[in-house]
Length: 163
Image 1: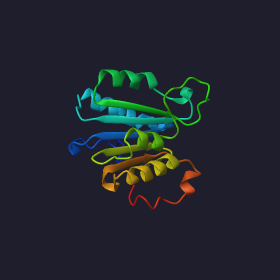
Image 2: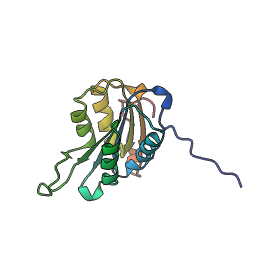
Image 3: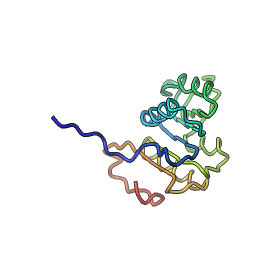
Image 4: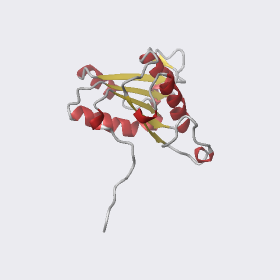
């Protein structure tokens, strides 16, 4: 029996030697999580930021794990964002979408970073626009979209030529 691995293009560019920004939404956290855990296991010293969005606190996967990593690794920053959390829940973190949280966390200046985006197409599109407005461009952005049947019918973004 022959086996063959995935041949995707969504992986950390170790040779880039640039701060890394991971933008993830919902279950799109799976790839960035494994990438971040690998970077930390390799004792990466460059800055690593994860901006992770979910609708509610109940849907915010691995929240405690990322908070612990941020406490124990000075180069890791975790920015959770909730888009539909009840106002009276006691959530004190960012309220809004991933791209909005990233814009606020970086004061709309992403220059010098490598960005890795993983999530639903609508999140990816909003993040692409935000990163480009913040002076990060195509050569420094890597994406992995999660497609549904409805998503497959949409036209590709004019903001991004190759995916």
